[in-house]
Amino acid sequence: MSSLYLLHKPYQMLSQFTDTQGRATLANVIDAPEVYPAGRLDYDSEGLLLLTDDGALAHRITHPRHKQPKTYWVQVEGEPGETTLKALRSGITLKDGPTRPAQVRRLAAPNIAPRQPPVRYREAIPTAWLEIVLSEGRNRQVRRMTAHVGHPTLRLIRVAIGPWRLDDLAPGAWRKETLHAPRTKARTPDKRHRSRR
Image 1 (cartoon, rainbow, N blue to C red):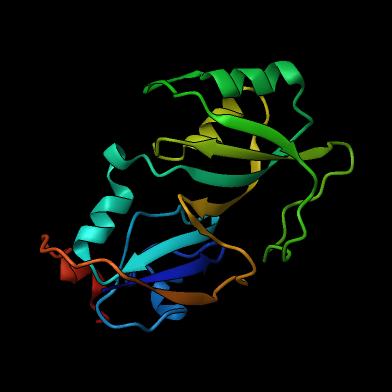
Image 2 (cartoon, rainbow, N blue to C red):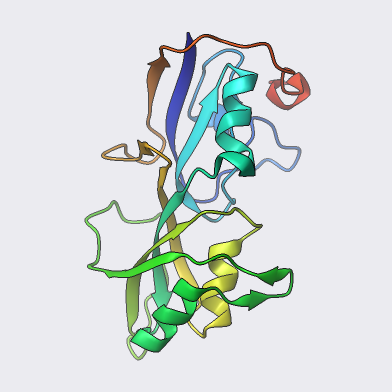
């Protein structure tokens, strides 16, 4: 059996256990031996990060062939119109090529904990919330997509990866699940990333 940890990664925390520059890391919020992130979440993004002690499970979660959809709640600057939403749904061309079609819908402001520090409020510029579901995982993709259509991302929260959901986990909190599937041998992630030195 494999252990899977669902963590609500706070804003301005690295998706790793060590840092030479003194920034917050996963070691600040979770102390589970021999676990490794299955994927990553940007320093300035919040939300669901999966960790596991099973290298084969991490591979199944992160490999593009398995196409685990990732769901994000995104606060953007301005109020995107239907034409903009259709463009995001259809796929847009970024510097590294066209994006795959995405699921995009408007979202009422979610009932979530305030970010620390908070998003800068500008009275003259409205904001809107979108739910965006991607089937690919390019570097900073959501932020680049919303900027491309003229609505920069102000706050980004990942709420689901495949069947796993953030639900009511508070920032910095985590829960453990045990997966009843046989473990298979796979290359163990580089343990240097897990060192606490």
